Length: 194
Image (cartoon, rainbow, N blue to C red; front, top):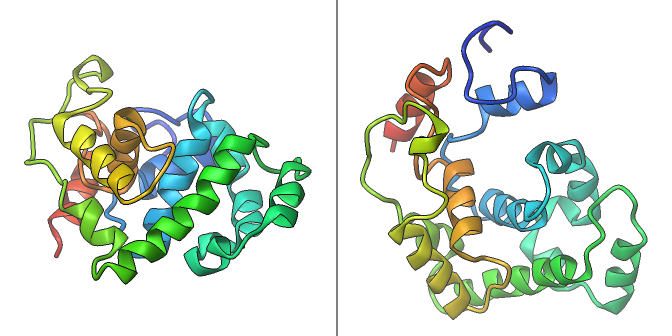
């Protein structure tokens, strides 16, 4: 991890946020569970700050069985009630129910002969120049719009184009670290690996 004073796009003031920025954001996530977790957390983040979600991440992992799609897909009404009483997570019934639904949709992809990683990574856009500022970073793209439509077609909920783009950023489909950011080169190198 780079020093505290190194130039960063975000997160420099908080150690947890800084570690997420330096070591995770933009790094490729290619496994089903990892993608399911990131998509779920991005949906919970909608309308909130990412730092709020990051601080609750371990509680989310505990509440959602480390985002094991098979375990979450088996949740019923008792689990929804348990989650709605869990002060460690964001208690939004629509988002809780969407996460359970999306676990079932993830299993549905398997049954259809594909996978969540295949669907997500099929929407990776071509590389573009490093942004100079966040004014150069889009909130959504044609690829994120297409990904959101594909996920919805497969039964996913709470995955609009903006949430899909945030997931693409978090999972390394794009590298939106700013041009002078300490993490840009390492993220680029990680994204270039097969």
